[in-house]
Image 1 (cartoon, rainbow, N blue to C red):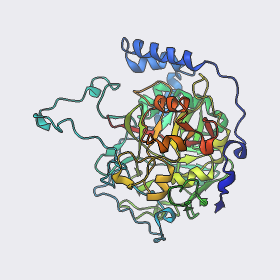
Image 2 (cartoon, one colour; image 1 turned 45 degrees about the vertical axis):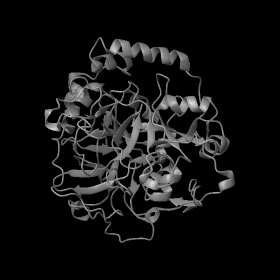
Image 3 (cartoon, rainbow, N blue to C red; image 1 turned 180 degrees about the vertical axis):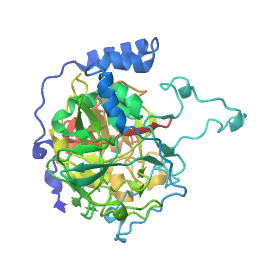
Length: 471
């Protein structure tokens, strides 16, 4: 485990974050451009506008598209029964030492941990069967649930079942999923999230090609899933930063979930689920997963039928609750907290410039010391200290996602914020759900970076593909 010195806890300097370069646009210009985008998007179909406005390059040719079409899979059938969550590796004392996912999106009935919205019929005289379709079925940018990543979402249990791919790296078996891609036409074909920003993540990506079955042959990059995840939180009320930590899965120096595929130089998000194991070793279709062999987000895995069920994470984007999956992080601390894979090659991503046109990242806003008293029963609960205190996720705030903005990327640049002592003493601390609200509070002096440092990029990134906008 890596010990943490509370008096000298730092991010960017210690992590050798990539040196920043000048921004292409000022915040004011970006706000004006965003406003213009909102107006123009009401006049043309949203997908067409996004492609013409922010595409990193021209769409791939029909010949290249035909090659990538080999990766298309049918939408999988979810498990017939809810997967059991107990690990076959045995139990360990305390949820911060348990292997696996931790508190799930729908496990707690409390409003501080379960963000699923009430139905429109609540408080209305009209019964639920009489309500028409939500506006989002007409225009995905409007209010209403919108599934963004193609798969089988179980809204009762907070999971998604996706196709499981069997690829290889240097002759060893790689089990992986596909979630995002840098080309719009391929995204439409395969049912993946489109992210033009992924086209700029090549320096943090492996390379690969498709075999005849549409599975990826990677050039490099492996993951060891056998380590025991462990976190020792700080004292009550100041659980973050932890006293020590160790992620449950560790990639080698060449591992990143991102891969550039030829032909077409198309960048995919292909997080690894398991490595160097055969079907019999990871056959857990009903749960009770052995997390020494698979990713901690896995709720169930069926290598025979090529499906994997992943637990979803709660969050917000521009005030709207969302679900996403958390798969990889560029530093061990984030990987340990997020129950995901430490991916060293992600450290090559350019951070701190999410609003430039050639940025590979979008910002995610993470509270360090948000409200935690009362745990999940507290509707204002938020932050890393709350996460380390009760085992549920911190209710992070994501920047742009599809249907909310045009600049989505699954590679999230972590911006940590801390409530000042003065703001807490005056009773101002609460749950924040929207990017510009957070930025305004920073400007007003209510929020800073960790330990009173300047607010901005914390020097690490997290791979969190978006799955569903809940309203």
